[in-house]
Length: 111
Length: 116
Image 1 (spheres, rainbow over the protein chains, first blue to last red):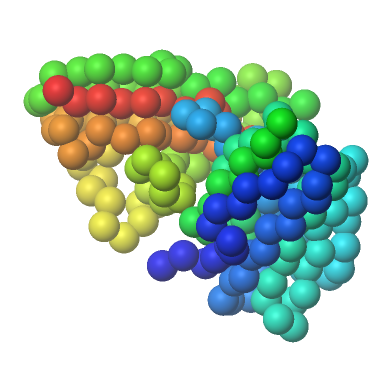
Image 2 (cartoon, chains in turn purple, blue):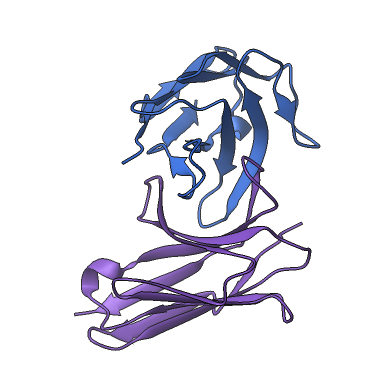
């Protein structure tokens, strides 16, 4: 079963707008990660947030984690057409533990 | 940064033949690598965890005799799809994690397998 469930499943926005993607999970975690995948390619790690962290920033990315609600959000500010891709959240239970991926969100940024 | 090289990127094979996919960590050592399978427009499903020097741990429902995994060194893991059939056609992705633990898992660029 899917540990992570992202919503929305598809998001279309105009370049320059912000994109917010949400992820919910079911069991306890050590960390939550967000990945990006361009069509037919491998995954690129975007950001990792540990269970004892609430917010983290990296460039135009902001991720939050609410362990009480078992949810996370990824915000991409000032989106660009090049941000068009699928985004996945994944949860891990510890170092070198396997990751469990959500179903993914398809983001389309219109130029 | 950590780089994982996966080859081949695309392969077409006939039914009944075997295909080997390689996953190499180029600038770091990975005692553990992971193999995933992804169908079109779907998420990644973990197939097995590859441990250097020991047997792989397979997820429920994954046939270990069909998907042979070898992790003979700290930088190389291989997945062999034996006696491939059209239903094995999929996108296979490997990943490994830098032992520093400060980064997420690094993924290979994937292998598109088409069995005809």
